[in-house]
Length: 464
Ligand code: CAA
Image (cartoon, rainbow, N blue to C red; front, side, top):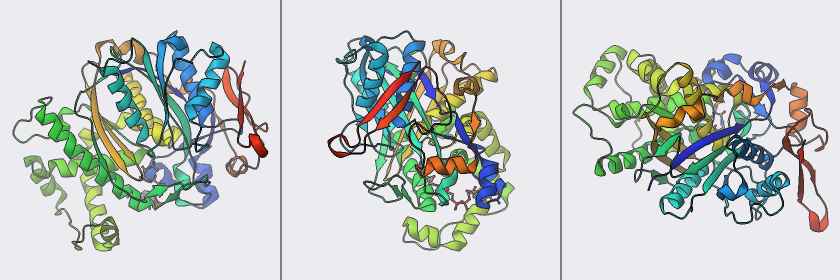
């Protein structure tokens, strides 16, 4: 039995901070944000929004667009790392909000949980729900998988430039109009790590930035190696002499904590995939530099990062490599379109990978490319840490979904926050009802109880 994504919707809060204002306020070179990290705007939540609101708004959009009623939905899963309760799952809040529109107990038949594994949990939720469909348990109903996050780092920390907020809802079924997942190739890697984590009661994570960058690359490479074994074993792709699996992936979507991380990941994976192919000999001739190797043979991430000569030379080598025509051709044809949305929205943690997918669909379609039958590869990473590689094929009916995609229209008119407003919201100095924007036809948070037996209880309403 088949399974895949039938439709996809996004909800992005309309407040943002601009990279130039931010760079000025923090005394950073704007080139670092715009060129080094690939960030021009970061979406921010208003005082009356939380990750459950974002998720409910994305769900409502996809249900209304497809004229679905709650009885069409069999499962509602939410993947997030911005959880605000240790016990009550975020999908229960979302169902509560949706029932304000669709009627009390209208989702009673529906199952689902909140999933956690940093940014990769949305991919696990997609995989598990696809298998629910493949197992024939869906009884003709859809699974709704929602990825929703507020990426928030401490003020003046190095992660502060990689924030953002938003939710993406994906409708899964056995006859998807958009993307059918390749069966029996989904591959994972997992290891107990402390690259990025958010202990109980802390609103922002503890981050080891450069460690997390390198760990992301290593984990994704490991998952890719398992993916290759599975793909070759089940005959999905057959390589000819001097080819790599990436030659058979038409588009690549990577987890994007910031848009340039996608480019870094592509460069890293291509270096490993091309190293033993004849094209690499030509590239090395052009670059006029041998690929550096770490002097310290311990092989730990710490020892690699501490090897300053290696790190410096590897950085130079990577820069030379990404400037070659060979790299640029792959970058422009397989990856670049997926990075556009991330530049103007920022980090969505669990939703970043799927924002990239959404971006790639819209901007490739706009170029006039026929996307039918194209194979899409996904590289998912979650700190802590786990990676997942999987793939799927765009279906003949995809135009029904992609033709109306328009990121700017879907976000709506955005409002730039002053740095003062941003810091007030960031530090929770404004009350829930001291919101900056008025919202219509959206779910908003109206109260969070702070006392006694109702401590932490949240109330939401649908703003007509
Ligand atoms: N002009 C142009 N470019 C500049 C520049 C300037 N003046 N100054 C720096 N740059 C470039 C650097 O060369 C670098 O580019 P390359 O990576 O291509 O070399 C880029 O800008 C970033 O510079 P640094 O690495 O020096 O920046 P930093 O030390 O401040 O750290 C960061 C960047 C690690 C991403 C940090 O913002 C951070 O910790 N972010 C949060 C953690 C994170 O996003 N980790 C990513 C992997 S983990 C993950 O993916 C899970 C998740 O979602 C969090």
